[in-house]
Length: 470
Image (cartoon, rainbow, N blue to C red; front, side, top):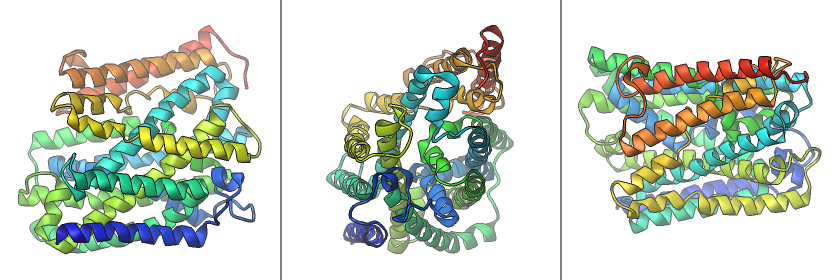
């Protein structure tokens, strides 16, 4: 019965989004609509559309899973720590506002070409491409588990259906389709969240918030510290956010991003109630799978729907950003988009949909090799820590390409070493680097000291090899 209703829910989700696309997106959109999300009359997205789209695009299926899992381990600090990441919207809003008012930039790569040169822009775009690649498989994997065990027939059918369907409507309207379907998806997710809170809230409030041991509490605070350090670099390597920061006026964008950060961060914090429920009542296993099963079929379907919706909204944004990166950013195209660029962008979407799901095949490579491949493909916030000074200190007139390299490479190397250490179960970093306690103590130390190193490198480059001010 559950299996049948889950598949009916999947078909219902497809019909819901398809109808939204039919009503909001014409069968043929212009290149400007495809890349810039303009209306048929050439108008930029309104504030409500920008807020809803930016917010839902960062409520990933994987983020929902992480928020619940962290709260089930660390208690309240786990949910707060993951919600801190959503302050990235504020970082991006302020930084991009000043970039735009100081220069007529159409994107972050456009700014990097002007400030640091073409090679630096290419390096930045490679980091973004890896991020987009990871967005595909990480989201399809989470929601597909509701349709069967990893590697089962149901698992693969669900992954294929949502991927193909999302590519289909993304090909029709690009960013325009993404913006408008995001509004409907945001409304649906909000309704589903209310249902979850009404169901779980009384149990948590009647028993009180779960109390964790002092060691666990400190470990949770350590994670909060890690999240706070990473918000200064994290948003700049995610085009799902940054592409939307150039669609409307700088002032409107800043307002929209701050509102989106409050909404999406609040959603994540509230959803962490699922993890708190797990911790309070001693439920074993993954929070997003164990908790709904306690409340029977209706709640399982609600969780299924919320994962589908969040994954779909992130995937269409990923595909539209892939199109822009390939057809416009890589070649540093300025001016109005062309139909030939839209054609190239559509093929890039299809390619990313295929390549982005290949890591799911790691399930067939064994208990050690498969997870190691998944871990190795994940570009962490650590790897891009050097982006913080590259954007936040860009007002320094003598900072140029040398400053970029002195900031970018140390962070990348530290991130790769951290991934290798985890994948190989080896000890690469000395114990004294750790700050705080728990499993994130080493990550916090590496990120904090690493950010200081990248910032020092950026400033050193501006002093040793000063560039002409721009």
